Image 1 (cartoon, rainbow, N blue to C red):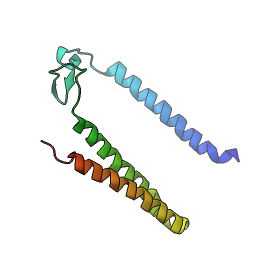
Image 2: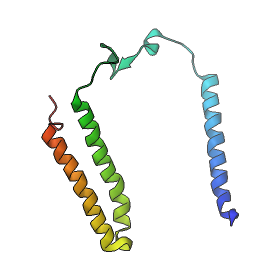
Image 3: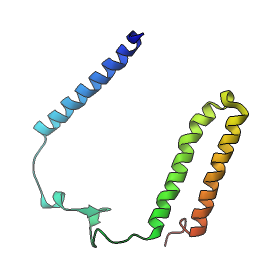
Image 4: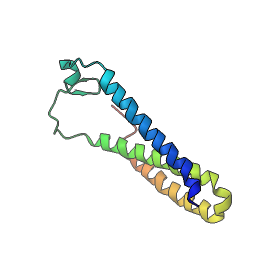
Length: 118
């Protein structure tokens, strides 16, 4: 029974060894020219201009919630679509409930104005 796992073990070992070798080669052969611009903190491509502990606008959090809603929707729709024949009506109803919850979240985002950026 364990013979089936041997190719997976070999694949993982080769991947780990190759990753370690390539990282080591990069560290040994790579240029080391420290520059003040490389070490400076930046934010979205430009210098930070305010305190790092400032409060963010609630729209940033709403956009994050919106991203999670649609990311989860896509992540769960693909396997559901593949297995729809085998899970039957129960799976269809469960996905309808899941999508209903996501629609409620989307409507909440819409009402809060997260889709309008000014």
